[in-house]
Length: 521
Image (cartoon, rainbow, N blue to C red; front, side, top):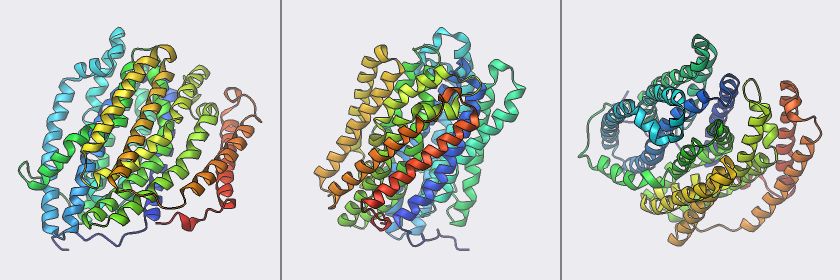
């Protein structure tokens, strides 16, 4: 075994790599749905559920903002630059110093988060102040979930290295462990808690998952001879460059998460159940967003970074064009399906135990509003890497802050009339503003030039999408009222509708001339 990092393997096609990440992510999302079904059955839309989702959202928000958001979008391009220059010893030293600097910072942030949990809950869920029991429960659970940030941020760091070496499957599989941990704690640990404290078992599940996820990735780093030996590196040029790129990206890269957190703050001021309704709405939106858009964005960032380092502007533009086409091809039918099948989906997945038909109706309303912005949210995931790969984090900052302010303003205006549906609508509108400005920025800078054939692709997608929605909606009307049917009739009928919808969409695209070879990159 050598003492220098293994060279990356020959690159697979972007479509093949995306398929690997999407498959692993789909497994995670399916287990995530199972997890949510278990939690919904156990907690419903109770005060305990609201408290847990807030306690989970805060470290998750910080994780996406610092680890998967700003950090990886700064770290991966710099790592790719070091790797492309061929200095493998310098690459390993960069990994060591980033590990030490990041780890030390995370220890301090975690300690502050645990000690300041009451103040954090007061800031991020001010509406809980009217219910002392809910607030106390949220504080207790946040002290368990906040250390998750330490472990999962280091896991994301390890995943960034593996992705840069084209080992996409391992980081994509890692979230499965969180879902397994939560399901296990809900089924086997929660029964040992009092009924009004069962949510605390889930908080323990989050902490356990963080430890397991980090330990899972370390052997794969060792195989690449990239196991970090943490060293503090505040003065290291590579570390300082990453920090410089991170500073503006803290705002721009994860504005979607900032918008979601603003909605949680406003939702905490509404009636009990509002936070939970938006949570389950977000979970369904995250299915296509996480399985496909994040998968494509994950795969293209190292590729775009390498093409920028190699000064290949035409290849850079072609890669972006492929990513945008793929997102639209998948995102359009996904958004239409979520809008048309909101009640059947929610009823089949969550209407059990404490989660009532009323909860389904309320969640469906916000899901329809949210689905109007799904395509934009997916586009953000592939447009933003076009900036970060070129080590431009300032432009997305300006766009992200503007979109966040628009979301806050729209949310404040719409929440009082439309309640939680107004918050979902604000998210959708601000996502379109964000995506539109990112697209214009790439076009005006000249780094993205659309390839021929866009008019034909739009025609194919729209016609196939209309055929799919018409068939799905008609099939959904052929069964009994969804909230009155048993679990297996719901599952069977929904499965039939989904399979039929996918088949009609794909066959329509084929009839209209789209072939698999058109999707390869």
